[in-house]
Amino acid sequence: MEFLELFFPELIDYIDQSTIRFEDKEIFTDVTAGDRYEPDLVVKVKFREQDLFFLIHLEHQAQREANFDRRMFRYFARLSEESGLSVYPIALLSFDSPKLPQPSTYRVEFPGRVVLEFNY
Image 1: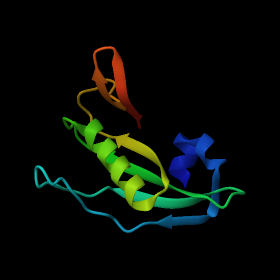
Image 2 (image 1 turned 30 degrees about the vertical axis):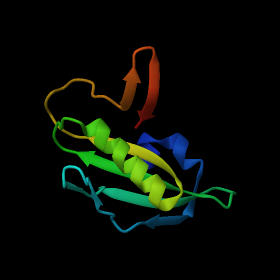
Image 3 (image 1 turned 30 degrees about the horizontal axis):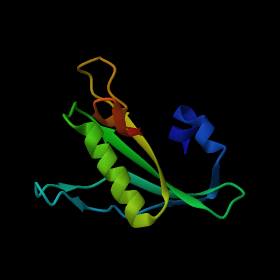
């Protein structure tokens, strides 16, 4: 909770803190490449004063990774599909190099049209 209080204080206002539950880690398989992926942390929480739950997905990344944005989207899509809940994605990047702004969006575009824009 302290992490959210420090970095996402606006999110704390929406959470019923008595309902925080750490979910078992799911393993997702990329059927085309055969790779297996496991999200770092998934927490189920209830909206304050509502009878509605959502998931917080936190992914820690200690080194730069090509296609990290795509992996974040895949986790989002699979978690959303399997749970039927809204997902609040958070990426925690802790690598030292390169010290450059990193993407926080996954986009699928065609000329003159954005088909998908996923933000994390």
